[in-house]
Image 1 (cartoon, rainbow, N blue to C red):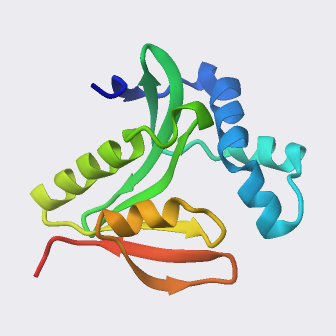
Image 2 (cartoon, rainbow, N blue to C red; image 1 turned 30 degrees about the vertical axis):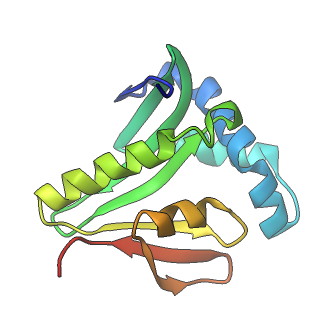
Length: 148
């Protein structure tokens, strides 16, 4: 049996713990993309851009990651899905994305996301049926739909 996880609304008083997960999950990729990790900028941006739908991911009873979603009548956008390194590669991200896809299919919506070009998570998205829809200098834009 894999790790047990649950999803719940994130609380503002978890900001420091969520930021620590963000840094652990993304610092390498941000540094590879932009040359360095500016902690003051990253902390400020993270703290000042709390999305309407930020969900905490508890793994085996402790905070292990977060999921930021932007839902509209046209699509569901995965803004961030970040897990602490200790919880990566255990099937949690796949399970969460599958549940987002199931919700989207129920409402006949596509799912969109972007991924840094250097981030190996792109392989996960491709395994789950996401395809590239565009790119910027730093990111691949990807989408999934179960519409024919």
